[in-house]
Image (cartoon, rainbow, N blue to C red; front, side):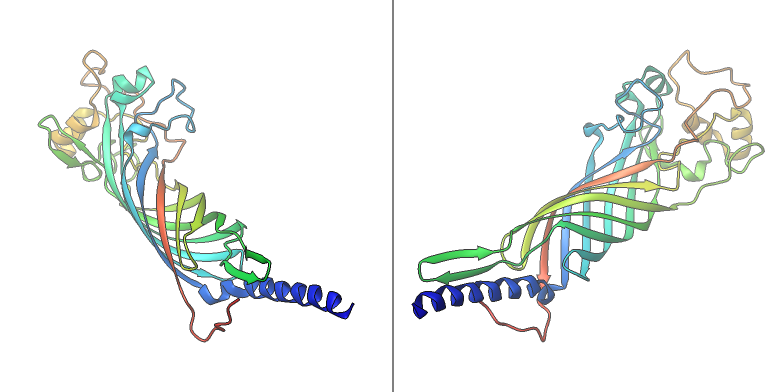
Length: 303
C-alpha cells in the first residue's frame, strides 16, 4: 500500500520539480543576438494601389519591396518582457507609374531611398519562449514547455534617409539638396533634415530549433515624423523662381507631370504635389535567426 502511494507521489514531485526548473530556465539565457533578412516597403505620397487619395492602409504594393537586413541584441528582463537594440538597413521605393490612382500616374514622380535605422524596442511575449527540457521516467517520456513563441513590440528610434530620383538622362540624383518644393524660399517650407524619428510597432513569432537557436518571422511598421521620405509633401513652386535660385535641375526634378498636364510655366505655386497632412511610413518584413548566449554562473542542473 505504501509503495502504491509513494511511487505516484515521487513522480508528481519529480515532474513538478522539472517544471519549476523549466520555468526558471529562461534566466540562463538572458542575452540574445540575431540577424534578420527580408524586405522593406513604404507608404507615402508616391505610388499606391488604391483610387482613394486618403487611403493609407490600402496603399501597400508588394512589387515595390526592396531588400533589407537587421542586426539585433536582446536582453530578457522577465520571462515575458525583453528589451532590444536594432540596427537595420533597407531600401524603399515608390513610383507613380505603378499607382492605382489616375492623378498620381499623371503626376509621374518616383523615388528611392536607403534607410539606416537605429532603434530601441520592448517586446512582450503573449506566447512565452520556453527553453525545453526532456524527461524520461519508466513508462513515461515527454517534454516540458513549447518551442513556439509569439510577441508584440514597440519602440522609438532614429533613421537616416536620402531620397533620389532619375533625371531625364537616367542618372540618379539626390533630391533633398535640390529643394524641389522651394524649401527655404518665401512662402515655402523649411529645408528638411536627412534624419527623422521613427516609432516601430509590430509582431513576431519564433520557432526554437534547440535551446539556443531559433528561426522566426517578424513584421514591423515604422511611423515617422517626416513627410519627405519620398521628397514629396506640399505644392509645386514657381519654376522661374526655382531656376533662378536653385538651377535648372531643381525645375526638372520638381515637376515631371505628363505632357499636357503641366500648368503654365509662369504659374505661382500652381497645383498640389503631395499631402502635407500625413507623414510617411515604412516597414520591414524579416526572416530572423537568433542565438541565445548562456549566462555564466547559472545552475547546470538538467532533467
